[in-house]
Length: 495
Picture 1 (cartoon, one colour):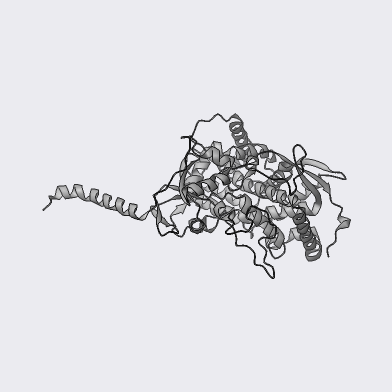
Picture 2 (tube, rainbow, N blue to C red; picture 1 turned 90 degrees about the vertical axis):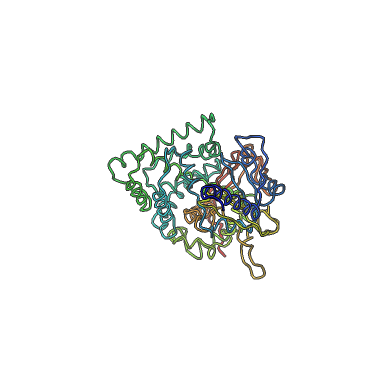
């Protein structure tokens, strides 16, 4: 007979040993990506060639492994059989709150974690503001701003402009004006781009000397603070803003947030709103300009829709967002999906809110403890020849069903899927499609490098040309340019 006191001491230890051996018998031991940088981890390699980094890890470590990124140990899932379930989260044991709070602190300067209820209300409000049902409220403001900007270009002559200013700045200004009203300081774009490009380094838990990024953070905070200060003190709201922006304002007012926290929240929201929209639109235009046959096919589709189906560009822009879908613009929809497939690193960061096990294809399981962080490697599916023929080539009509061919399966989306999908995806798709329709309809256009090398079928992007943050879409290291000339509309045939 074991004395009661000894039993009380031994039973918990025996139970823990039992659980440990039980878990070891069922779960997978995870290999770790090797690094020579104990504090930076794999960040440098990831930043310079994320796709190559993941390909090497999967080749050498298998489909599930650990890496050290952004100051965190992250479990990477690369098996397509796991990516879908992880993103859809049928376990209801994953969320992105920890990473969102981390970004709010590193980039937005918040001192404390935002209450989960406030984050949930903001997320719901942003989803409602960005949905196809809400877009018609401010679509006219968005498209008219783009038309005015395009109207300033190439008046009777060819003009060479920065692709970043032509694509990203135009989308930034049109989106900001449509959502936040004409009082929003559009000159914040410069600071936004600096922060966006330094995002990876800003999220490292190291006292790095980043004078350019810190100066951009300080300047952007000051500009946003000046914009909202008067409205915040007087509680008059944002003049001429969309109803969705007003709803966000009310949520923050009801939460009794300080103006400093509101500034930080706005900063992070703006990066989330503009970053992937601008990058995706840039890549889509580049792929089309490198493939002139695809560009001309898409131009014919746009001309037909404008002149035959809608009757004018004004009627098309006045239609609801569903009119820009695959029924009217199948080639544009396919081209955008193909661009996301090729450029989306699709590293969706989640943290486990409780202990859970994720099954793998060989019958074992990966054990996650509460607080552990995981991410998906969408490239493992998107760039695999097993799923997509000639997987690393841009094929403009890859996702179109034809009479004798069914379109390819949908890739891992840059916007995620399931309960954790990007809440602004409807607006992002609307903004990119509207930009491309107006751009291709309005201009004869050519892309080139700073030295004048034309981007055509023979021009190849290498890992040295692109960089990656923990944002979904890669971005270009070096500036590109476009030569634009107003199109001769008399030559259009809408047959």
